[in-house]
Image 1 (cartoon, rainbow, N blue to C red):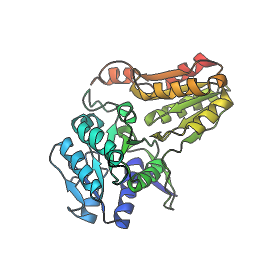
Image 2: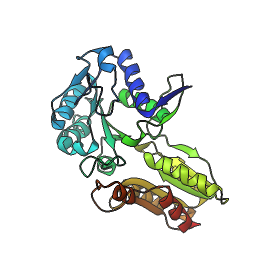
Image 3: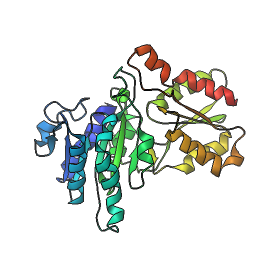
Image 4: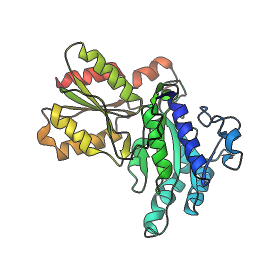
Length: 323
């Protein structure tokens, strides 16, 4: 095993695929000599040169549009946007072109591209640089949406995302970049659509994404002192979604809490909750509890930001509603 940060794991996966396949290249703002807005591309510019680690103008529509064209003509681009908030500027290229192209050409064309999207609050970047917009992306047929919570998952899922022949939105929580964890020495891909049980338990299931996985694990650790065993399930990919692992867990515990960092209203947590209620209602002893951020733009103030975003304490309260 190697000890790596979340950011290092993503970079190492990109490095491996770039060495294997000359068609893989990176593009985005400051991904070159600067090493990326959050340092994720690091020294890849020095290793592969400016042809394969390309700095772009400050235009997300150009970045995503270039990636779509490159993918459609046989390359495998990895496009980095500094913040998921800026995907709004490249929405036409991502939603109306990348996601639709393979379908509209009857499968005769593939669009093997990855768009890296840093998300989330936690370091006072304020309303335009702190959002969690994954629900927008999961709503669009033709896109795959990946959201790892650990270095191992980030590494394995990035390998699979680069190899996939469809456009993949690869969501990375900014507050996880510095989190360290063990990563297998062996290069192991994690298939898209395979959830992971981060902690086993018998009393209640918590389905959590991104940084909320760590908050759920902290809540589970605290509740274990009271004799309550919480099972924490990380979907890892939001689409395709591994319903079987989620449903099997709920059939065991008969209780479910879904927690994401997105604004609760209209969030993907609601989709997961609806699936549970529609498909395995008879396995529930109580209604699904759904937790998310408050209905407001992300504040700049540290205390207000912390107040707005769910944490382990909120998850404990949500669990105690059920038990």
